[in-house]
Length: 196
Image: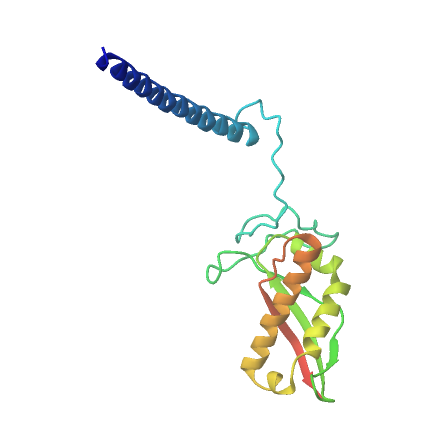
């Protein structure tokens, strides 16, 4: 008689443990399924596409020969002929932007002046050029600060000038990222470079 209650208690414990495992497994499957359905609805795959995907407003790389949807139309009297791209170099088209005025600044720790004309390039669509025009004042201010923080010895060598070009490109991209959410400038060029 004493053996029977022990066997019944063990069977009851075993039944509760098996039931608990089944319950947890069912809960896990429901959670995974619910998460999957949520992901499909959020991406618009399910639900009739009522959830609009956020438009990607970052400038895109433009391959040579492709049309830039943001480029301005040709002005009257200008040729509508397609640009001819070479086969070499980058697979992407390069657009250039020249800042309207020269930059003049004292060099760091000296009375020496530097006067430069600056241009930059991008492989992205025309929105980058539009942003450069739109924010030219803020860009000029930030670039003048970089020039003023440059020592005379930093602009006397080709390596120093290349380092300055990289710093200016980083500065331009920082300002554009802060104002438009994306940089897009690949390189900076000196059109003129005078040290006095």
